[in-house]
Structures are given as structure tokens and as C-alpha cells.
Amino acid sequence: MHEVKIDYKKCVYCRTCITVCPMGVYTDETDKVEVTNASDCVACMSCVPACPTDAITVKENP
Ligand code: SF4
Ligand code: SF4
Image (cartoon, rainbow, N blue to C red; front, top):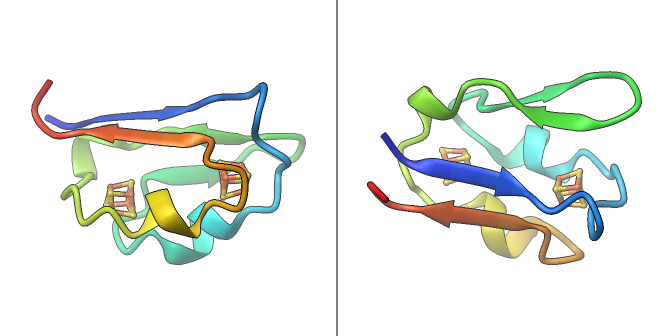
């Protein structure tokens, strides 16, 4: 299983990661985005460069 983390010191709640992720790893929790389905992550890395503030870290099979 891959490790997906959001650095909340950097996240500006733009929700781009929710739009970009093909696997539904992220969930909009109304006031923040949470990583709720990390077990579905396929490490496509689409979310990492899409995040405008570099808040996302994805580690393959840590
Ligand atoms: S794309 Fe980055 S800044 Fe935007 S909600 Fe996701 S983690 Fe936060
Ligand atoms: S690496 Fe791909 S599958 Fe994993 S959370 Fe990011 S966009 Fe979703």
C-alpha cells in the first residue's frame, strides 16, 4: 500500500487533488480535504504536481 499525505500547513483547500485523483483517494470533508482511501492509491503521481502548494507527498510502498 502506498502512503499519501497532505501537509496541512501548506494545503489551501483548493480541492484540485480530489478532481485529479482517478481512484477517489481524497474526500472533501467540508472544511478540509482528507486522505480517506489511501489503500486505493495506484501511485500514478497525478496529484503531486497538480497541487498548487506542493502539499502532497506520495511514497510508493514505504
Ligand atoms: S491540491 Fe493541494 S492545496 Fe489543493 S486541496 Fe489538495 S492538498 Fe490541498
Ligand atoms: S498518486 Fe494518483 S492514485 Fe494516488 S492519490 Fe495521487 S492521484 Fe490518486
